[in-house]
Amino acid sequence: MKVLLDGMAALNDEIQWFKNEASKWGVQLYDIVPQKANKDYCRFLESLMSSEVKYSMAITAFWAIEAVCQQSFAHCQEDGTNTP
Image 1 (cartoon, rainbow, N blue to C red):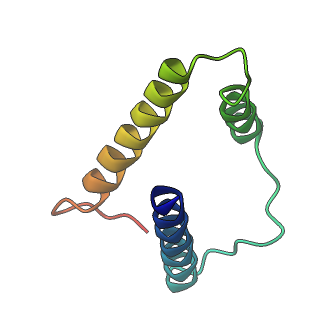
Image 2: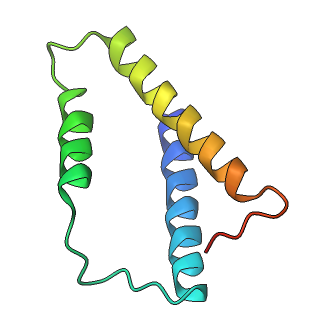
């Protein structure tokens, strides 16, 4: 239970950080229409929750997704990178 609660707390902090950064850069987060790629990605994530998907496959996919996100954000923080 603690792992789940800690994960949710971390996610809440990440969402708040994202909102703060969007505001700082003047990015509006309301009235956004999801693009096809975003909808497809959401469907993919939802498909991983199917009872037909083995746990090892789902957890590996989530791990890979998080690894890519981490690398992407790390790149944004490199010297000389001009990102919003």
